[in-house]
Every structure is written in structure tokens, then in C-alpha cells.
Image 1 (cartoon, rainbow, N blue to C red):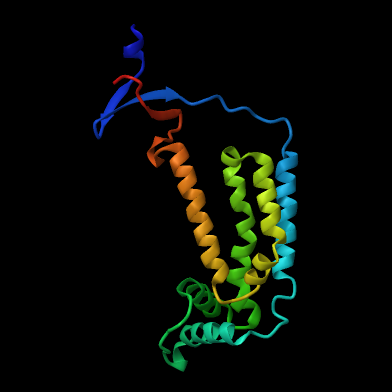
Image 2: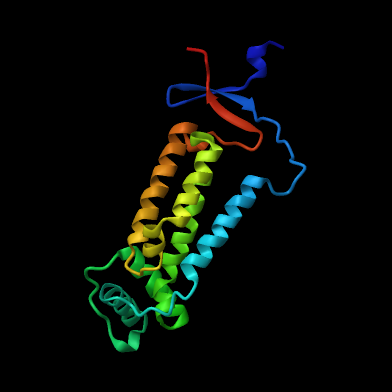
Length: 196
């Protein structure tokens, strides 16, 4: 059998693709690496700093406007209020939480605090691109940043916008690095053939 017949080829969109077996997966002897443990500690610290006493401080006027519209529309017997000058994503989070759990200052800020906590895990997915140390340092900065902590504890939706923008950047970088989403397979990858 020739080498050309051993490697299956297909043509899609004018590009020739070859099927190559995936790399062998190595099993680590330890369950957690030191890097993963540091990310877990940063996540735990971020969780505590964003959720601790989140319900104690009263809502600011901007937060109250946002939360009042979501709370009012989550309870139909009160009538429907026109939604204006609010963050649509924060409004949707708050509406769902108020519909399920009633309403209080902590629930109004829960979505922002959760997204602000999960935000520190975004650099983990860029370890291969920017390096492990730089990704860990970026997660450290996001964990301790006073602005990120403040907006994570504020119910206006600013942190949702920041997290969405950073997620878009991460997905774009990963997409440009990998090429296309359809290239992943169970046993291998579809890669452009070197044959012209």
C-alpha cells in the first residue's frame, strides 16, 4: 500500500484535507498540578471577595433602577413596566433570579458577582498562546483588581460587558490559532494537505 492511499483525503470548499491521527494522551501521575492549584486558590479568593456580604450595602440609584424593572416584570400581577436605560444582559439575569427566588439586594447582584468570579478563569484558556506564567499572572491581576471587584459587586451590568468582550477576544485568539472549529475529531484532526 502506498503512503498516499494510507492517508485518507477529502476535498471541501476547494481545499484538500488529510486525516492525521491525534497525538497520544499522556496521563499525569498527580491529580492536580501546582498551576491548577494556584488557579483554584485564585478562584476561591475571587469568590469570597465578590460574594462576601454582597447583600449588606443598599443598591445605588442605578442598581435600584435596573433591579426594580427586573423585579417588577418578574411578578406579573404587578403589571408590566417598560424597560429602558438598562443593560439587557443584566436585566435578563435579574429577571430570571427574581422570578425563581423572590427579590433582594443579594439576588440583584448575584449575576454580576458570578460573572466577575468566572472572569478570572479566562486566562487559563490562553496558556498555550501567552505562556503559563503570564496567564497565571493575568488571572492574579483580574482577581485583585479593585475595578473588577467593584464592578463584580455592582448590579448595573458593567462587568457583564467586560466579561463578554474578554470572552470574545479569547475565542477569537483561539479560533485564529486553531484555524476552524470543525477540525477536531475523536481520533484525529482534519488539517490542510501539503499537496498543492
